[in-house]
Image 1 (cartoon, rainbow, N blue to C red):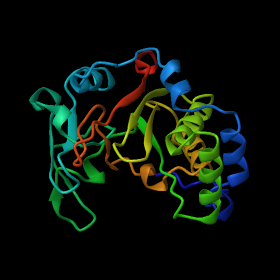
Image 2 (tube, helix red, strand yellow; image 1 turned 180 degrees about the vertical axis):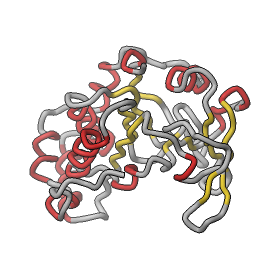
Image 3 (cartoon, rainbow, N blue to C red; image 1 turned 120 degrees about the vertical axis):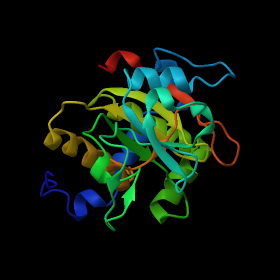
Image 4 (cartoon, helix red, strand yellow; image 1 turned 180 degrees about the horizontal axis):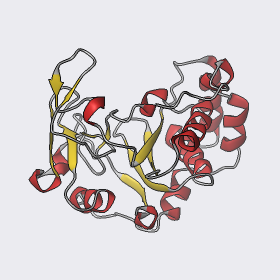
Length: 236
């Protein structure tokens, strides 16, 4: 496991609101992200199976969850109705079970999660988090923009630095960007990720086994986890 660069001190772990403001001021938003998508999934019918087959070709082991506490690892061909699920580990698994940090066997453990295939960058701003976020979101509101527009602008910015395959709406407030990174040196992936953290991304997604929202899946509140951007050409 590579250690984070020395710059992952307080300067990197605290969001850089000057930089976030600069990206927000580009004026980009959710509509721009949607229009930039090479493939637009506008059907009311979920496209989860087709998307997963492109992201994970052949028949890899996938860990998927109905909830954060109810999950299984199966070969892709043994998964049905993926559109009814909330979660997926964005990297193929190496075994049906692995040992957790508590030394218990589980289908969802870091020890049975394979090498990175996708890196998830999630933005989830909220006015209650800090005075800076409250001011930023308040200013955006006066422009007729909201938190999803801010998340979209940041993901559009990051796509200038790494191949973005997918953007999924959480069904709540956040957007999940899927960046393809198979075969890329861990140090390079790390630099990109910690730059994203400086823009406000959730640090928890550095964990290869961290659940991401299932593309076009169904959140527990009944909302569809809509795919706003899909570019299969970056996936190899």
